[in-house]
Image (tube, rainbow, N blue to C red; front, side, top):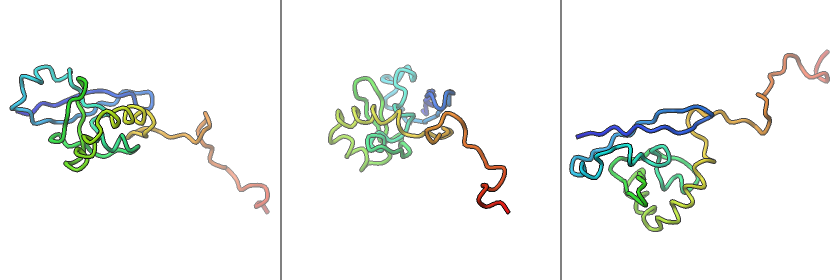
Length: 126
């Protein structure tokens, strides 16, 4: 049986739906309420997030820690993440809000959008 996890994250002041399928036929009783365990970090790899970046999550590389579902990119990432779960969760929780997400606009320190020059700078005008 395939369960589609649907959850929302705040990205650039708007909600974006993210979907992550999980094959959980043998674990159906544990996941009777899919919304009880939404994947953390938008379904991205928990180890990658703990390292300050993102990578796709693999629904077969998962763990539940303190009632939170984490997925990793592959077996190696999961082993590295498992080596110090508590530290990786703590660092991932700090990193997650700082990591640019898909669809997010990044501004260069100014509150206004960058302006496109309409003419050459005065030194270059003839």
